[in-house]
Image 1 (tube, rainbow, N blue to C red):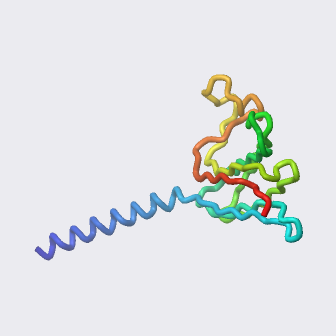
Image 2: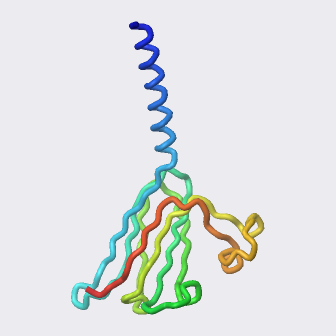
Image 3: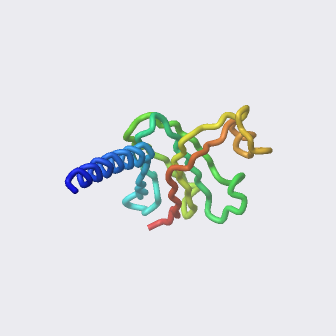
Length: 145
């Protein structure tokens, strides 16, 4: 009975070690904070902070003006490469996007247009690449306070 219990405990220890390593190997999260001008209440910046265990990730930022009907054409879309375990990035909002909205995502891979398998890929046609392997995503509104 004792040897069976020891064996079971060893198996469980290996299982939890492997499980913890696998979960740790895919951990990427971020938080965001919108900063407002004290006097006017106008949104000024979005700060994106987080950590990852990947060598390299990409931050995708889309800002949309209030009342936008064609988000691809009326929005502003940026991609920023991040190559550090902890990161903090500031995004200036600008007057165009007051009372608008935003989407912010972390991506695990960058696919070059020559390697893209998506027919007529909008992002590859626009940028020469697209981002893939969504790791985390947040969206919100940029209301005046």
